[in-house]
Length: 345
Image (cartoon, rainbow, N blue to C red; front, side):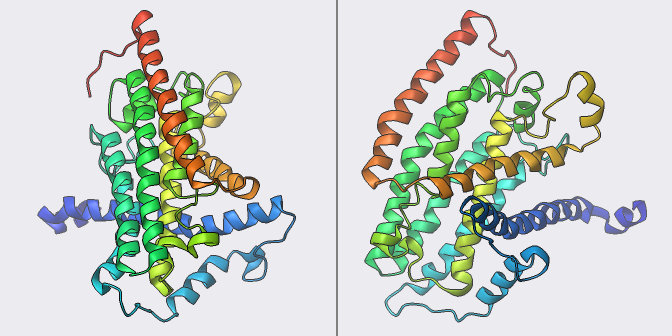
């Protein structure tokens, strides 16, 4: 290893960065592929169906077969569409779903860029995700797709306000924007317990943020055919799907980091301490993400879709006032009991 580093010379830091990017992107892409399998299996169990079972042992090769099928389909661009924007939009959505992982800590010291404003970086990247949907709806030259893109913009704005206030509540308890410090602040108790209403609100908000059921109004098959990706096919359509599932994993990882202790083990006390220490932090991190994703799937299998006016009312008239009140209440309690953190960013 030392000989390799000496051989690379000044390029060694760049090589380590590229290696770190590959080490993050490859597991994320595999996770996205098998999240589709996980979703279909969980929903089939809830609805007493079999799910994928024929392609490979236990149907484990079904995601690969689906990818190969989409890869082999013809690319179609509508005659009235803007071809540059039409083709760029799905890749922008997919790209933004990957770059957010740069600041996510998978374990103690396992982070590509441990910046002091990590939470702001994540919030900014998640806000940019709507651009791909708006661009796809506009460039398709279709009223159905355009209405789906506009719905996405309104929906994301409505729920990102509440998400920002929820993040501020967590930051009050930590005193830092650094994601690693947020995780380490939960060594005594996970924030999901003292901030349980905010945890539930955040989970519902990320359902809306990722356009997932029961808030999948931008796709609205009954009235918008398929929403913003009505005119897409082949790998363009696949990029939207990859971006959606990658965003689900990303939002779940943020929820785990903010409220469920990140890579910290769940039972780090008494007789459990020696046992849980044998399990690496990234494994606990992945298991917690899988738990949050299970609730994503459960919501899709069990709940009816909201009307659009109900979606807007929930975001602006329920979540926004509640998050503001809880933010002020949290600040007051921390100030009264002298628990406000004194550390900087």
